[in-house]
Image (cartoon, rainbow, N blue to C red; front, top):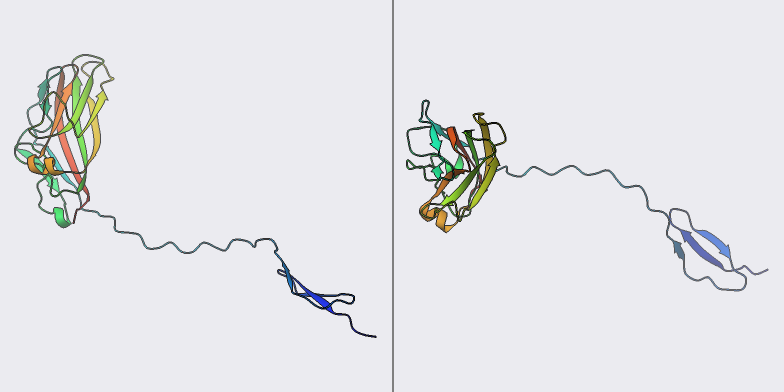
Length: 209
């Protein structure tokens, strides 16, 4: 009695199975896909990148500095002139750089840098229901708070005579106008306010090459 040829059938994940075929020659193997296996464990996290920590500098009013009475709808600089208290730990390319000059003009080190500015001030409104606008403007281009590079409007929600502690964050990337002329931080209120304890923190985020 002659032997029958076989088909070789392979099923994924299982051994091949030989099946006899009556009067026919053996042909190719057939593979039947099975179910996908379980996902492997996650690999280790790569090393952390450079944080770009260049420190922070604080420019604040000296103790006993004059309180500013700001009439309604009038522009006033955020920090006027020296004397003032300076405390900083700037590092890298920003070490010893003066972000604020004696005329209260904000300076930039290089085009392409990026800075975070934290502006803190106490405002006491003389009337209820007003607002205080804080803006950063290219020096020499200040006219009624027009053309701001960045600005915020803060509502004065408490009763007249109540101190409002304001802390606003700005992120700026200086360009040619900023580099050439500097920038001014200006305030304007819709109601008469008394300003005090004005403080500026500058934190470099990016150092241009």
